[in-house]
Length: 254
Image (cartoon, rainbow, N blue to C red; front, top):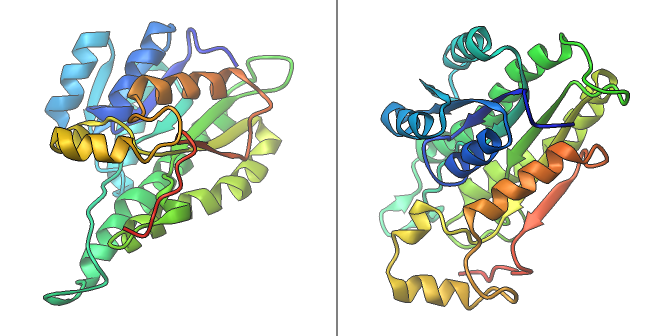
């Protein structure tokens, strides 16, 4: 499916992978709506690229329903939906202070997994209602963001790994369901990426992490994630798959 001229929704669009993907899609001619809990950050990126921004809690049904409807009024129904919103706190199941509070685990799953599903269900309903854009019958493309932690979670990543593993597991069944209406679903599982969170570490820590990546031995760049999003949108045979974007790294226990 072509990117130019279509409306796109990008969650987590105020920073990191989401912001860079929003920039990429806008540069390719998409009409971009950025959704983020941090309204100021989303607005800043939107102003930079000529998009629109909304404050949105992806784990809240009403918030997503209202924001997607408003974006639809301004840009038309989105045929491109990119899910980048997420959190990544680290905490042991049983730490020095005792068991992890259950609400801590619940929050990560709510934002990362339930939040992703919440946006998918609303965006896909709009996609299914529009006419196909090409002879293949494509109506839209949904890209989700998992993590290599879904496969090799480290100590302290039980909640994060569970949430990202859920995204991996639901990719194929959702893609199979949406096949009848011409909507593709693909998940990217990034490795160590140079996002604001990672770049907040010291240079020594960044270099140590980068050295663990077989090739290229560096942190991944957000523009490499965004470029892969573009390839997924444009290549109709990419569907129901989880693509690792990690330089062949396999994470150690800690």
